[in-house]
Length: 288
Image (cartoon, rainbow, N blue to C red; front, side, top):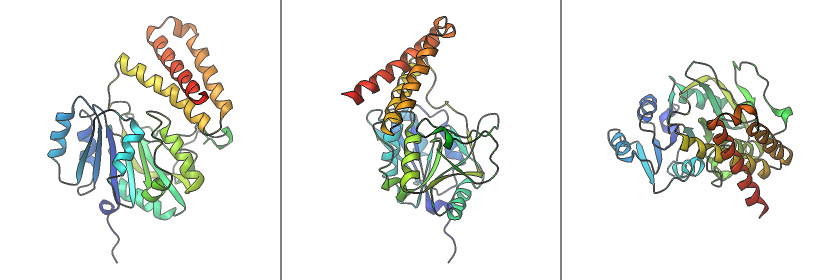
């Protein structure tokens, strides 16, 4: 029997929040006929998003949330719409390279005991950005800093372009909806690798990533992002029993908040105040 095409085996899920400035480039890179689910987290530009989706073929579906549920919960809602063998969670400010989907599928077939994969994610300068470490595992498991030129088992995956077997994703309960933003990919990576199979970096599958371009960069949004960074860092380290890393993160943030570079910079003060506030909120919630 002929092998099924990538378009029949993969559903792309992307979570949008005021992302219409970058989303068309991502959609243009998707092979024709590939199912795409866009989950809109109550964006201000929803009317334009609806027009973008209406202009595409019926393989693109829009799920509209009445409020911002966060990244992980949004991904879960998108995954509920899929019935393909694989899911590719893809940021709206990315673009697939030629044959990326097929190369990811080929890697999944080579590594039948693996649960999830990252392609080679290139930044705007063409440099490969590899997630080599996480506070959720011991330092001995961190990946050394060297170029990855072949398939490599890694300790953690980036959520910017996360390719996963749908059954494995469903078996671990998907993303933790208690995490609004940040570290949800670390948490999912650990749950997948511990119960469903190891994680693999696929060097010959390329995704281009603009990075941070999908939701703007105002002072208000930076404060919100840093609050969630702090909250999620403490939430996840405590969830996975890394209490030492939890308190080390708090100490490190406190030292940075009190440094001269922060004291004399309004932007840095807001950043670390917000991050520290999120950390304290997570501590209080977990202790209550």
